[in-house]
Length: 211
Ligand code: ADP
Ligand code: NI
Image (cartoon, rainbow, N blue to C red):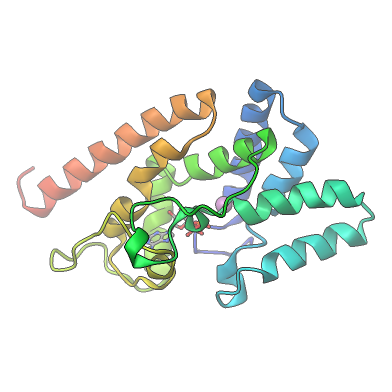
């Protein structure tokens, strides 16, 4: 991950690890599980396995098994790293657009801490930087007024979109504030969400040459 430019670089992992631990302390979650899951949470990302959503879990499980962790601890870590993705919350079918995917199972305190930290890192000033870095890596334009953003997209559309980076704010970033589990996370999300809106306001003013 040291040279990744798709938003999953080492410093993303570093920030998520620190923030997840802070949230975990507030929530009384198991710090060891939270830290290990935070460090491994993007190893399982489907984008690293040509879209295969299961391959990541196999890799995380295999590595933890080689370190001789107990099966129950391994299950807990894999549960977090495979549930964390924003994409998993999107519906599979078009007719369910706007609804949450119902396949998400039990939500432990540890899953909440790591998920909140990962989502917070996609918001605010850092979230903006990551969105444009990701867009640049995949040759996406910054913005194209002819390509409208849609708030409600399916999992497949999220995976295959080639839309401009600004659209990603509407497809994901602005929705994150209402998807945070913990009180400390929500407090931070409020500030980061406000910053996203402020940024978009200024962006469109500049686009029109007004400011
Ligand atoms: P998740 O694993 O939760 O589905 P991603 O891996 O898609 O999240 O996101 C990684 C980073 O890249 C985040 O900062 C996210 O906002 C950004 N990103 C993902 N898809 C896009 C996109 N289509 N355009 C711009 N940024 C994106
Ligand atoms: Ni992440």
